[in-house]
Amino acid sequence: MMMSVYEALPAATIAIDVILIVLVGILMHRLMRDPTRIWQEREERLREIYAALRLLVSQAEGQARTLDEALAKQAQRLRELVDEANAVRAPAEDPGGRRERRGEPTPPPLRMRVAGLRRSGLELEEIARELDVPLADVRVMVAFEQTARDRAQAARAGGQE
Image (cartoon, rainbow, N blue to C red):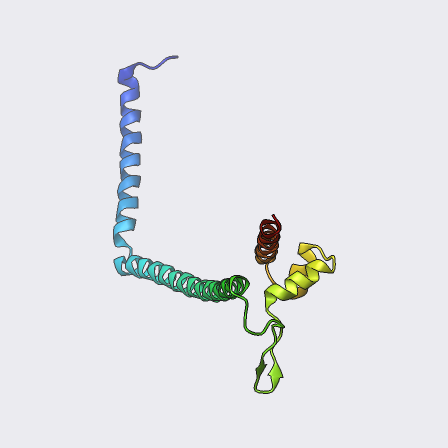
Protein backbone atom coordinates (compact mmCIF):
# COMPACT_ATOMS: atom_id res chain seq x y z
CA MET A 1 0.00 0.00 0.00
CA MET A 2 2.84 2.17 -0.23
CA MET A 3 2.77 4.85 -2.87
CA SER A 4 5.62 5.38 -5.11
CA VAL A 5 7.17 8.77 -5.60
CA TYR A 6 5.56 9.06 -8.99
CA GLU A 7 2.11 8.41 -7.54
CA ALA A 8 2.59 10.96 -4.64
CA LEU A 9 3.93 13.71 -6.91
CA PRO A 10 0.52 15.02 -8.10
CA ALA A 11 -0.78 15.23 -4.51
CA ALA A 12 2.39 17.03 -3.39
CA THR A 13 2.06 19.50 -6.26
CA ILE A 14 -1.49 20.34 -5.21
CA ALA A 15 -0.39 20.83 -1.58
CA ILE A 16 2.45 23.16 -2.62
CA ASP A 17 0.05 25.14 -4.83
CA VAL A 18 -2.38 25.57 -1.91
CA ILE A 19 0.42 26.72 0.41
CA LEU A 20 1.63 29.24 -2.17
CA ILE A 21 -1.90 30.57 -2.69
CA VAL A 22 -2.32 31.02 1.08
CA LEU A 23 1.02 32.82 1.37
CA VAL A 24 0.16 35.11 -1.55
CA GLY A 25 -3.18 35.86 0.14
CA ILE A 26 -1.42 36.78 3.39
CA LEU A 27 1.01 38.99 1.48
CA MET A 28 -1.84 40.74 -0.35
CA HIS A 29 -3.69 41.29 2.92
CA ARG A 30 -0.62 42.89 4.51
CA LEU A 31 0.02 45.07 1.48
CA MET A 32 -3.57 46.26 1.36
CA ARG A 33 -3.47 47.49 4.97
CA ASP A 34 -3.27 51.25 5.45
CA PRO A 35 0.42 52.23 5.82
CA THR A 36 -0.46 55.55 7.45
CA ARG A 37 -2.13 53.68 10.30
CA ILE A 38 1.14 51.90 11.04
CA TRP A 39 3.01 55.20 11.12
CA GLN A 40 0.33 56.71 13.36
CA GLU A 41 0.72 53.80 15.78
CA ARG A 42 4.48 54.35 15.86
CA GLU A 43 4.07 58.08 16.40
CA GLU A 44 1.62 57.43 19.23
CA ARG A 45 4.11 55.07 20.86
CA LEU A 46 6.83 57.72 20.53
CA ARG A 47 4.50 60.28 22.17
CA GLU A 48 3.96 57.87 25.08
CA ILE A 49 7.70 57.39 25.46
CA TYR A 50 8.24 61.16 25.35
CA ALA A 51 5.59 61.72 28.04
CA ALA A 52 7.21 59.06 30.23
CA LEU A 53 10.59 60.73 29.79
CA ARG A 54 9.16 64.12 30.74
CA LEU A 55 7.70 62.56 33.88
CA LEU A 56 11.06 61.01 34.77
CA VAL A 57 12.81 64.34 34.26
CA SER A 58 10.35 66.16 36.52
CA GLN A 59 10.74 63.48 39.20
CA ALA A 60 14.52 63.75 38.96
CA GLU A 61 14.30 67.54 39.32
CA GLY A 62 12.17 67.14 42.44
CA GLN A 63 14.62 64.70 43.95
CA ALA A 64 17.49 67.04 43.06
CA ARG A 65 15.75 69.89 44.90
CA THR A 66 15.26 67.65 47.94
CA LEU A 67 18.91 66.64 47.83
CA ASP A 68 19.99 70.28 47.53
CA GLU A 69 17.97 71.16 50.62
CA ALA A 70 19.47 68.27 52.58
CA LEU A 71 22.98 69.25 51.49
CA ALA A 72 22.35 72.87 52.49
CA LYS A 73 21.22 71.74 55.95
CA GLN A 74 24.28 69.52 56.31
CA ALA A 75 26.56 72.37 55.19
CA GLN A 76 24.96 74.64 57.79
CA ARG A 77 25.52 72.00 60.49
CA LEU A 78 29.15 71.65 59.45
CA ARG A 79 29.59 75.45 59.53
CA GLU A 80 28.18 75.48 63.06
CA LEU A 81 30.59 72.72 64.07
CA VAL A 82 33.54 74.59 62.60
CA ASP A 83 32.47 77.78 64.36
CA GLU A 84 32.16 75.91 67.63
CA ALA A 85 35.52 74.23 67.11
CA ASN A 86 37.06 77.64 66.53
CA ALA A 87 35.35 78.87 69.69
CA VAL A 88 36.99 76.03 71.64
CA ARG A 89 40.43 77.00 70.31
CA ALA A 90 39.98 80.70 70.93
CA PRO A 91 37.61 81.33 73.86
CA ALA A 92 35.02 84.00 73.22
CA GLU A 93 35.13 87.33 75.00
CA ASP A 94 31.96 86.38 76.82
CA PRO A 95 32.76 83.22 78.81
CA GLY A 96 29.10 82.64 79.70
CA GLY A 97 28.29 82.12 76.06
CA ARG A 98 25.39 84.57 76.22
CA ARG A 99 25.48 87.83 74.33
CA GLU A 100 22.80 90.40 74.25
CA ARG A 101 21.42 91.05 70.78
CA ARG A 102 18.47 93.34 70.43
CA GLY A 103 17.67 92.80 74.07
CA GLU A 104 17.36 89.00 73.81
CA PRO A 105 19.99 86.57 75.07
CA THR A 106 21.18 84.13 72.45
CA PRO A 107 21.04 80.45 73.37
CA PRO A 108 24.34 78.82 74.28
CA PRO A 109 26.23 77.28 71.37
CA LEU A 110 25.28 73.78 70.40
CA ARG A 111 28.64 72.51 71.63
CA MET A 112 27.92 73.79 75.14
CA ARG A 113 24.43 72.27 75.13
CA VAL A 114 25.89 68.91 74.07
CA ALA A 115 28.57 69.11 76.77
CA GLY A 116 25.95 69.95 79.41
CA LEU A 117 23.72 67.07 78.40
CA ARG A 118 26.72 64.72 78.32
CA ARG A 119 27.72 65.80 81.84
CA SER A 120 24.15 65.13 83.00
CA GLY A 121 24.65 61.48 82.00
CA LEU A 122 22.67 61.23 78.77
CA GLU A 123 23.85 58.81 76.10
CA LEU A 124 24.96 60.17 72.72
CA GLU A 125 21.84 58.85 70.96
CA GLU A 126 19.58 60.59 73.48
CA ILE A 127 21.48 63.86 73.07
CA ALA A 128 21.16 63.65 69.30
CA ARG A 129 17.41 63.05 69.61
CA GLU A 130 16.96 65.81 72.20
CA LEU A 131 18.76 68.47 70.14
CA ASP A 132 17.58 67.14 66.74
CA VAL A 133 21.16 66.81 65.54
CA PRO A 134 22.73 63.88 63.68
CA LEU A 135 24.50 61.39 65.92
CA ALA A 136 27.76 61.85 64.02
CA ASP A 137 27.73 65.59 64.82
CA VAL A 138 27.21 64.85 68.52
CA ARG A 139 30.14 62.42 68.46
CA VAL A 140 32.37 65.08 66.87
CA MET A 141 31.39 67.68 69.47
CA VAL A 142 32.00 65.24 72.35
CA ALA A 143 35.39 64.35 70.84
CA PHE A 144 36.28 68.08 70.59
CA GLU A 145 35.28 68.56 74.21
CA GLN A 146 37.35 65.55 75.32
CA THR A 147 40.35 66.78 73.32
CA ALA A 148 40.08 70.21 74.94
CA ARG A 149 39.91 68.61 78.41
CA ASP A 150 42.90 66.38 77.64
CA ARG A 151 44.95 69.38 76.48
CA ALA A 152 44.01 71.36 79.58
CA GLN A 153 45.03 68.44 81.82
CA ALA A 154 48.29 68.02 79.94
CA ALA A 155 49.00 71.76 80.30
CA ARG A 156 48.28 71.59 84.05
CA ALA A 157 50.41 68.48 84.43
CA GLY A 158 53.23 70.12 82.47
CA GLY A 159 53.03 73.24 84.66
CA GLN A 160 53.20 71.25 87.93
CA GLU A 161 56.44 69.47 87.05
